[in-house]
Structure formats: C-alpha cells, structure tokens
Length: 254
Image (tube, one colour):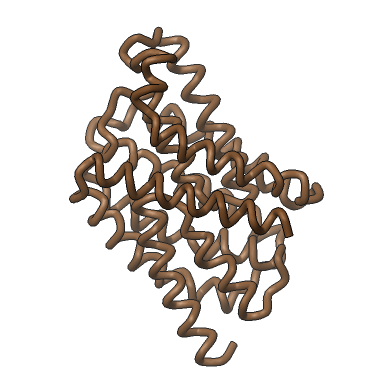
C-alpha cells in the first residue's frame, strides 16, 4: 500500500468507529474503501471484519457506564452470540453469497422501520414488562442468535438490527440498549477475528492500518452517544439504518 491508501484507510477507520458506536453500519464506510484500494470482495469482507473489531471493544469501554447492572443479561446472551457468529462465518466461507446479499437490504430497512415505529409496535406486541419471563428469554436468545449469524456473515448495520429488536424485548433506556449492542457487536467481532484469521484470506496490512483508527472513532462515538437524548439517538440510528439499507439494495440490484 502507498501513503494515499494508508491515509484513506485511516480516515475511513475513524469514521467507521464513530458510526458503529452510535448506530452501527460503519462497515459500509470501510468495506467500499478496501474495495477501492484494490482488494477482491471476499478478501475485503473478511479483512474488514477483522479490522473493525478493536473499534467495537473501544465502544464498549466508552459506554461502560451504561452497562451497570446488565451483567446477568450479558452472561446469558454473549455465548448465544458467539455460536451464531460461528454459524455466520461458516455461511460466508462455505456458501454462495448472492442469495443472502439479496435479503440483507430488506433486513436492514426492516430494522430501521422497527426502531422508528417502536412505540406503535409495542402497542401490538406488548410492553416488555408484559412479556412472560420465558417468552422474553426465548425471544431474546433468538434475536441475539439471528443477529450474530448476520454479523458473522457480513455485519453492516448489525447495530441497527440489535438496537431495534432489543428495544422491543428489554425494558431499558435506549442508551443502555445501545451499550448492550456494543458488547454483542464486540463478541461477534471476536469470533470473526478468530475464524477468519485461521480460514480466510486477510490482508493484514490493510487490517492493521484500519484497526487503530476504529479504536479512536469507536471510543469517541460511544462517548458522544451517551450524551445524546434518546429521541436524537433514535433518529440518528433510524437515519443511518435507512441509508445503509438503500445503499445495500442498490448494490444488490447491480
């Protein structure tokens, strides 16, 4: 890589870290950048998955104050996310990507719509306090697992999906749900790093350029998200999610 490529990757990494911490979808900044510097699509996908992981970790650190009291929930669902991420990585490495790529835009747009109309949907499915413990547990693990499968496969807008779904299941503030999303994203990211480091064609030069930049952006984004009022945070996430879904839909149509 030459100096312009390094600078481009560094800028993309900071931007992606901020976006991932606030809303999710930073991979739509880094993935096209990796393509732009000449990596094939599969190589760019796995390199991107490895590179953004440190940014997820710094997002967790930046939002740790909002994780207070959520230890039992995390201990229950992080193993589920790990299993789902392994399944998603296997899906990427062993199957054709085209069919899944056609579904992804609609998943992202659906997640953004779910968060946008959260209160109306709660009127239909019931407030989280109205869910029985068993139903809440089963639904929570199902959502975490399906999200982790998607995250292991591609992962762009995973945060949007998690925030939208968890907001319907958990009786927590949006800021605390966003912090929970950061931990789940980091757990999925750790699995992808391990699996892809062993089985996938990673461009380590690009990954090591992006990774420190995502750390800076992830921490800054998490701190910014904590200061946002819930209404503003929801609007930002919905906007990012809708934009990402439309971009993915356009790419799938090409």
